[in-house]
Image (cartoon, rainbow, N blue to C red; front, side, top):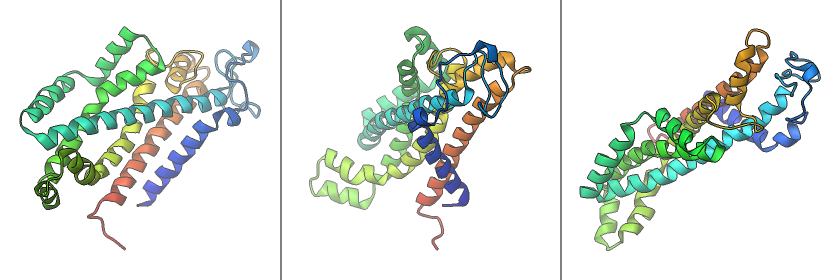
Length: 269
């Protein structure tokens, strides 16, 4: 793994620790308001300043990491699980099963722009964290299913799978013991990169007012609240924007590094 991948994994580990220990790391109560000190710039007592209600930006930024990573990890876990099951069935059985899943189901979901479908679902269900996770999961599983289907189509024709089938192994045993373990490598890489996309989608929907709602802090919601004070208090936009950028960059670097490390064709020292 190259140095960029290592930096990515260090950043990912740091973000996970920050999200886990946010209640201990936050120097102030995220709901404590001081209207007399609203829009205060960064200072020693408040390194990232105060927002429009006089709340500490650093504390809310730390708690926002919990929301973003929770959404990102849960969405990827659900999408990868559902996509693996559906893609494996389509690729292994082929025939009408593959035509129904890849020819109809995949194309149906891909026909709609993902972000518009998520907007419609959240507008219908109502804005909340759980509804956001559900909407992003429904639109995100197709990419994992297509990846697994393509890998299964290739692996199922290999000699060791044919030998297991000739020995009378059941379809479930062949899939679980022989096929899926040999297609998990690209799935892991895709999942790592998918967390970055889910974090960015959560921030985008929260920015539009369809994601996390007050009083729970969210980076996207902080950007939405701070854009009205862009000229008078730019720190309200600067720090949440940097947090989103660093998180997305960290998971992209980690995914690229993991892909390089797991690639069987990479040169060995």
